[in-house]
Length: 433
Ligand SMILES: [Zn+2]
Image (tube, rainbow, N blue to C red; front, side, top):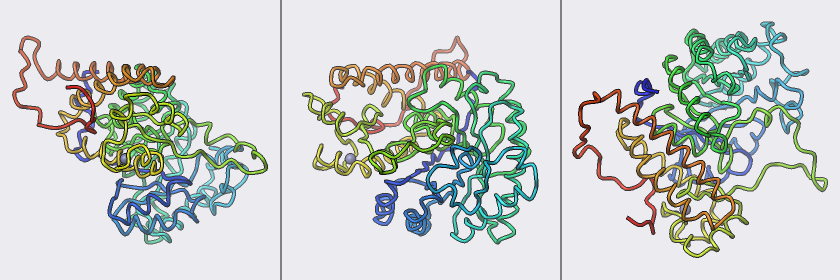
């Protein structure tokens, strides 16, 4: 892990939000009130009737608008059944295969309409329509190289020369068990041109980031750093903050109180059958408890905050919920967006070489201690505590390795006044000194 010192050290950290069905309206409102929470929005063309207004408001505010063409769904029979997929102008049946997209006309029928949509709607970037790969010589990789190059060409041909192409790498975590496989991938990715590499690992996210998975993810980021483009952690949620703090990635992407992990089956299986005659269209946004880095349903939050002592320590810490519990429940989408904005702005303001240490000292350690104290308040908290402890140990080990590389073993490490006078990532009221 000592080589981690060479990880991404871009100073500005970016946050991309995938608003989905339920959050688009509130996100548009916040942007139009100049309370811009994010650097970019990832737009879903199957929700265009809800998201086109958000796209124009975001464009007006100088926020990146990034199209996700839903290529994972288009390449699986189950995904094709998902709402709105079959109506996309670039949808063809049967589901795409690497063999079928080996044909140049078939690829043009895919990337042509995607480019057309992006140009017509003046979007600022497009995720290249790449696919889920399980090995470093997966047949999809050759096709994805071609699709990325040809999408660029189709955009240029239509006057969309200023629209960026970002390349997603949707990958199975088993590939990360072998460093040689990641190195092979990394070498290949250097041969095609794209603006950013978006990394989605199945299964990885806040709920599936134990020590081993986390270390492998970080090591993969180090190797993929050789591609020399900004690396974006897709669907990582709260663990994305950790990845940015230690310099593994320079940006993260997640949903609004969801999208905390990447699971390929969410893209390739048919939608859930209707309940009581109505289609199942996603879950209600949850409540963000920033002090623990965790989300709760209304019922869970009712039980948790009903326990004495929980409200002073775990209610809103960013000032967006003046009426306390009433607001954190009622304005949960605003609360999450503004809290996450504050967390990322805080990390961004710290010099890159100090981010990991300050994240450890001012978020992870206190959060882990708070989770111990809050364990009795809800049955889920002990699991949160285990997760925070895993993260704390992993980050501590990385920082020790970095320090060992930076300082000869015989030299006493002294950092006089090196640490800036700062509060916690999100200052927690009610914490003991
Ligand atoms: Zn709030």
